Image: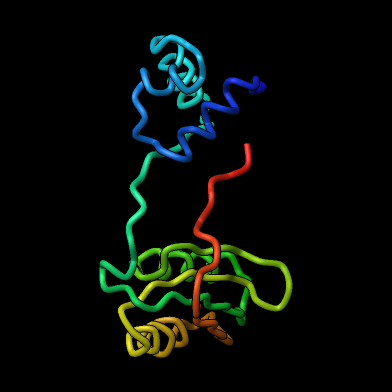
Length: 152
């Protein structure tokens, strides 16, 4: 299914505010609330909209350190990758994980209360994993652009 201009605008509106009612969406798109609601349901059913979530303020939750951690593996065997994936999935402070090309195999986005907690994560959880060869971390000093909506 291809998206038309109204679908694209609807997705953009929902990325800005996922709590919009069908009436508010209809007003923004010059549609009736029932038309806007049906389009939203169709986009959900077709998998364009995968989830609705609240964005929380890390510092208000006591998460004062954001870091990106690059991990280089000793082994790329399927069982090693599965074990590593299970380990990072079990760590709440690791909020995103990507596989990469280049020197690092994984990039982890991490939020911790302080540097000591980041140190524990790196030295007591990541480095002891049998498939981890090397870890390099970059601590975020400031975020110039917040996680933005996807371009539509």
